[in-house]
Image (cartoon, rainbow, N blue to C red; front, side, top):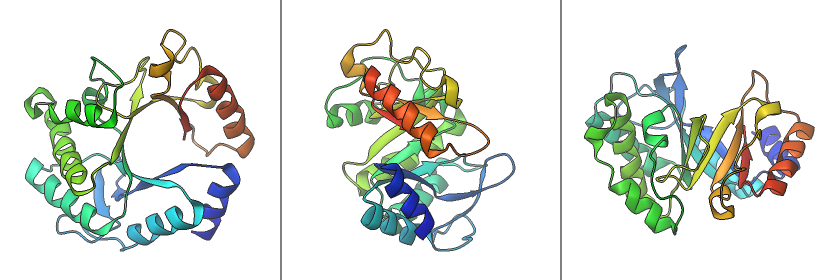
Amino acid sequence: LGAAIERLVRLGATASALDAFVRDGEGYASGAWFPNAVLPVRADVLSRIAWQMHRRAGVEVYVRFSRFLAMDPAAAVALADDLAAHVPLGGLLVEDAPALAARAGEAGGAPWQVRARRDAIAADTLPPDERPKLAAMRLIERAHPGTRVAVVADGARAPSSIADLTFVAARYAAALDGLGADLAPAQRRRLGAWMTASEPPSAAEVAAVARAARRRGIAAVGW
């Protein structure tokens, strides 16, 4: 934990995305890092890690939402209730939810307007495997007013209308290829590049992509 905090400080990171769940070989949630009544608890460490990163590294802490396996919305809400009660968080990083991330329509506006668009989503318009994630997200937002939502989407060329920040997934060298070129400045500020590769990027790679993003008016770079 100390080494991770030191690296966040050296990189000048402003946010950290933490896994709330233990993932199996297919990426589904098979356990948790916080007390709950739904999944096996591998260890109760998420709250301490989140608090220490926020206080010592000065970063905003996002919790990564992984896939839910054979979980109905009621179970997802119960899990989210426990997460909200035990873990200090400032945002949610939503992955593996392409239909939710691809919500088209008006993008931008004040945070409460973005949240209103999220609240207006009808669960039955989403694929069954994304409905538990929506239910859990809504409960956490009610428990932690002001929670920011970031989504990671493959191939997105514009920000999602229901996200505060939309990351476009790509490998390092292609992370910024054409990203935001045809968008207004206000839209580019809600768009980010999410670097993917088998190994974490070096500090030099992060710095290079971050500088290029700033020149283009892109809001954020993550990995």
